[in-house]
Structures are given as structure tokens and as C-alpha cells.
Length: 116
Image 1 (cartoon, rainbow, N blue to C red):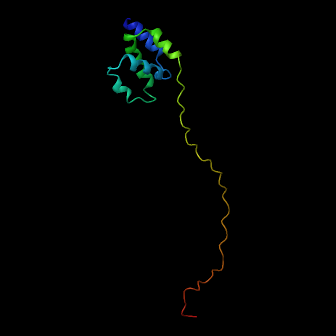
Image 2: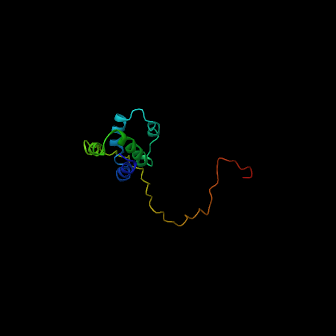
């Protein structure tokens, strides 16, 4: 397969959704690839890019039809992300009038006043 054919296939078929199925084939057919070190640091932002690299290497080993066939067989259910914590909704505060202070203060009887 020529470079342009591989590149067209990779551009048209690389996606983060099919990453899990493609990695199964990659581990099976390319066990000694240098790309395995990059796969250890995969995250949601790099999945599509790494899927393109995986497809490019797989096309040296197997046909495009086998890759597409593997994607349709035994689909892997999508991972369920834990729900994000919802912000606690607070009731709007109503500014109330300050309570009037007592005009007459009570004397503290615990303290002795010597003038009495």
C-alpha cells in the first residue's frame, strides 16, 4: 500500500471512538512498536492522534478491510464517565432589616462593682 493510500485511510478513519478497537489489533500485530511508550500516556485529547499513528502502523501488517471489520465486530461499550459534582444551588438571600438592639443593657452580675 502506498503512502497516499495509507494517509487517505488514516485521515478518513481515525477517531477517538474507535481507539479501543484499534488498540486491540495494534497489540496483536505490532507488539514491538515504539508507539507503545506513547500509548501509556494517552488521554482524551490525544486519542484521535494516537489512533492515526496506530492505523498507519497497522496498515503495514494488515488490510484496511480487516481494520474496519474489527471495528464492527464485538463493539466495546463506551466508558461511562462519573457524573461531575453539581454545584449546590443556594436560595437567594433576602436582606432583612437589622434587628433593633436592646436599648437597655443588662448588667453583668458576675462582676462586682465596688461603688454600689
